[in-house]
Length: 213
Length: 269
Image 1 (cartoon, each protein chain N blue to C red):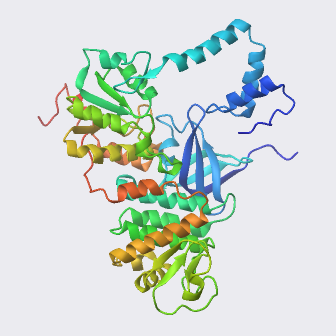
Image 2 (cartoon, each protein chain N blue to C red; image 1 turned 30 degrees about the horizontal axis):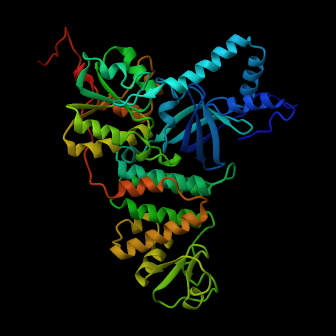
Image 3 (cartoon, rainbow over the protein chains, first blue to last red; image 1 turned 30 degrees about the vertical axis):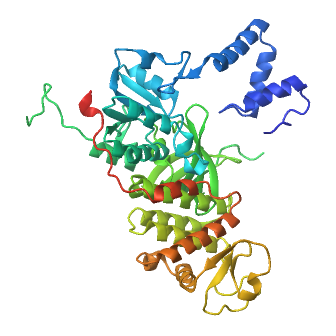
């Protein structure tokens, strides 16, 4: 890491700048700005922030079943008796669980892989929570696995990898529909999105029924 | 001071690598014909509905309008030339495409013209989408790429003394950059890879031919293994710290084929 971008800063200041700079999306300039903001911050606010960071580290664990982040050994989705236990939705990151939960359109369980296969970055299947998923599929009475990895090349690679691995278990696998996003312009759509949208087209419903039947 | 108005330029490119940047932006490593590797940002590319995102996935051949930056350029418009659908919908082809893209990236330099490497990668990804022999393609690609970029392995004469090689079995040294004659073989402590007469003939054929000429080449099991070891060793000798995507390629290679998963969630709402 670049440790000498503020050669004249006092040691604690330089240390904080460096710590911020390690965060994703924070460059050296933003790190300096945040640090100088904190120097002027009231002590209570700084303590509250430090405490929040520590408590995340101390109290947050991975759910022993779905591996989502949680405060309990088993998360509230996995312990909820009303959720459909025959469906597991496989996502890349905990944030994807929040996104799907916000829709209130899914009542099954989740499994968080904590990443996607990215050969170019040296991330292989063994670094993801795939073995844990296989254990769950053997133990639980799962009838459908929904592959909800990101619709990009690495997400697709992960999805195809899981398809091959799980196919012998005979569990039904589906994946999220891909195509045009709401509010998008057809003329700007890329070739892959348009092909997917054409392939996944659905029959027009009139008064809740299809004209043909 | 010159005008602060940013300069716009257009280029073709293949997306070789990307990483997340900020809230919803993407940082891209692009291979371009006129300027080799360029790094660029694509603002908002990770948002659904982004006009850029869908065009800027890995291994996409695109036409771009870019705003010139000092180190990082920024993509203002993107249009797909070829997404190589046959590559991205088959994990076996995909693992080979990523391997080819990685070695192309790692032997190329920033802001130096690389029209031959660009053309080689685009053509090879096109062939990869449909070829019956993806492994032969990867071997041919590696050999051609290393030849274009000045790392051609010596296959005609002894890499050490330059003597013509007798038509016989020999050994290959990645450290010394080619085949060795019997006299030079014993000098040095480098790792030597066996290269039978058959292996040498196939390597020379791959090196001097275009891919369509070698696509249907039948290579025997032992020769295939020797060629694989020789080309991997030579590639790793050129590329520092090895090729990261090789592990994925090896893992996927022997898996049996399984069809795609049908259907989505539409009918199950």
